[in-house]
Amino acid sequence: MRCGKWEAIRELGHGGQGVAYLALDTAALNLPSVLEELRRAVGGLAASGSAEDNERNALAALGIIEKYLERESEKYCAVLKVLHEPARKDEKALERLRNEVAVLGRLSHPNLIGVIDSSAPEGWFVTPFYREGALARHLGRFAGRPEEALEALRG
Image 1 (cartoon, helix red, strand yellow):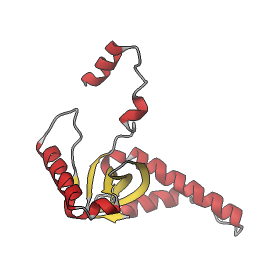
Image 2: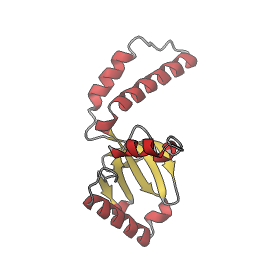
Image 3: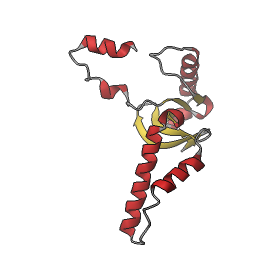
Image 4: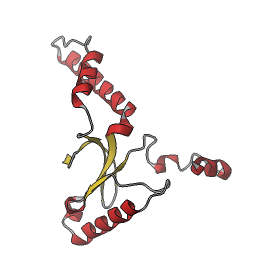
């Protein structure tokens, strides 16, 4: 799926209003250099012709691409949030999206997520990608240790 310059790579999660995808900024990504790095990395993996070897080589190449993107995630990756199809046809849902994007665009605070790009008429917006994952994954991390939780949030 492509929205503007953003190419969805894989689903990160979904909710009642839409789906969140890991997305690449195709305008910023220097694809020829990525492909050259991939060619160097898999240069020794020559396809032998068997389906099993070809599949193994393809999986190795995908793993290399994922590692490259993870290393370069701050430059090229973001989260693309797309409204479900029914919501994209609902004027009230699109108005809520326009309002949310407008508010997030005006506010600047370390504890608020920003909006990088958006198209409210098309029902999508883009926010920064954080490698550490969704906040929900970390809810139990400081259970029973409020001082440590506050210290972690201070930055």
